[in-house]
Length: 176
Image 1 (cartoon, rainbow, N blue to C red):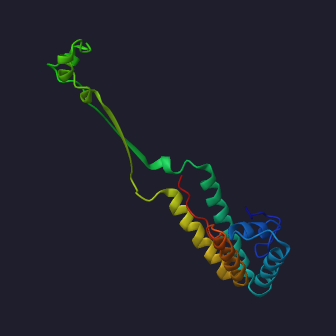
Image 2: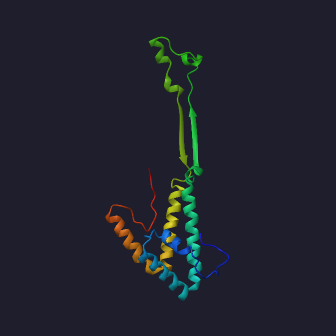
Image 3: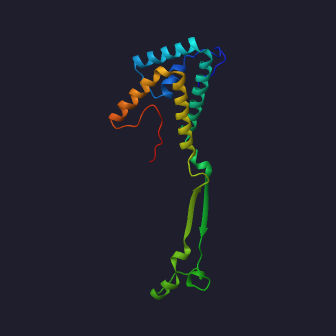
């Protein structure tokens, strides 16, 4: 995260450059890091209050990343329904005895001994999907504050798609 009391509220911290790079999923190359540094310097010089906004966005993205890494988000809203079926009172299975003859198998209906567990979610959209969507919104807002980095995000996304990957500027949900 990028909060610290040693730095003025309207100035960048040393860790902010890496936080920006990770938020926008930019490559760790010298030209890209230089572009990030220039964008940071321009924002600080021309719009110091924008630095406060950018740092708040970086903090929010870091918090979302921590929540996504924890991986226990979807289980919070899970509702389990359990239903069990028992044997018919007059059947052979009601006494607890297994059928001894082939004719008793019909009376011993094993489907009546079934236990079904159904898991449903109160909200059909998972929390992690919502967090990824919010993280992408924050990344877009950060690009509005640092518009020169938009070309880097576009370039990275284009190169990633040309080799078969997802755009790197944004996080995508993984199912597996």
